[in-house]
Image (cartoon, rainbow, N blue to C red; front, side, top):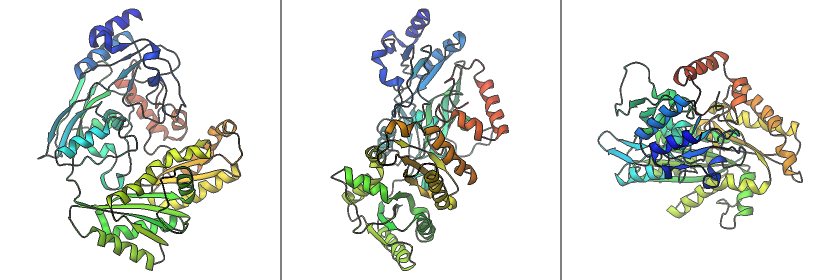
Length: 467
């Protein structure tokens, strides 16, 4: 291994090969502390050529590589195992914005560019890169694509997969697959890039991407709405499609317990509505028109009120009020910590089935664990529900979290009944690897394993993840 470390240092420079665990301890643990690993070294290449040389060497020496971007993933896909024999390949030094083309509405960025920086680069060129996540200040484009990240604007712009036109990928043996074309139409055989998006670094390492850009909205209208239940939220979504159509960019569901956790633990957060409601929707519209969007929102909410769909609503009258609405949604994951332990589920079901799913899964959870508190929130507009379960009041946190696997079985059984997915936007990683093997179509699994064996025959790329 010492010879291997010396070889790696010759490729990237000695100062970019960290071997003292104290120097990269944070890279060996994922954010929620669910997975802790060990690694022989953390290596920091600065170019595609260096990544290519590194993988060529690791392939030849059968040295396992764990690619890592901003280390914000929530399923352990970026965390090394406990053997101490793997190396972490950090992509953070691949941080160049190579090109912005406003005529074709594309930009080419390297994998280590943070999402916030990609957004800022697009904005500086008078364009919008619409992917938006809570971790956008730290997460990287390579990680976003490797997990097919979603976020709050999927209803309008799609997942990360939908925002990528082309990729530059280093294969397991060091060969570079150059697919950074900016073509909107290309029917020359298989669409290879989609093999690597969502593959979590198990098939190849994304080093750069050509991404779609959009004209930025000239106006926005944001409302915080109170309703009786998720069924009414679905009715509001249906009505919003009639009134606003493609102007809908976000449609987020929150339960009352979420508002209680937020306003009860953060003094600067307040309930936007006067009375309490069982459910809430944060809806945002955006348009290229400079005026008229507030009138569209007002007409939508007036119609919803007259039809008995909503109970109350507040339309943001200023940028600060819009920011306050969004802070409620974005602070919610942090607010859950005040309720003790939380067993989290990132799932999706068909949009029209979300209300029935929430009811059925909630009933199943309470039958399994009376007193458990369901905090089901998220992207109702695309069917992605973060179905989180907080511990019953008075329970010991460790004892509650000890029921993680059993609780997963309860919730995912309901997901299966609704023909849903056990992972909507966070990926599989280590956390859901065994669950995937039990829930994925057997032929699909066989096909995935065949692809893995073909592209990574020596199994050096992120071993033990996904499959």
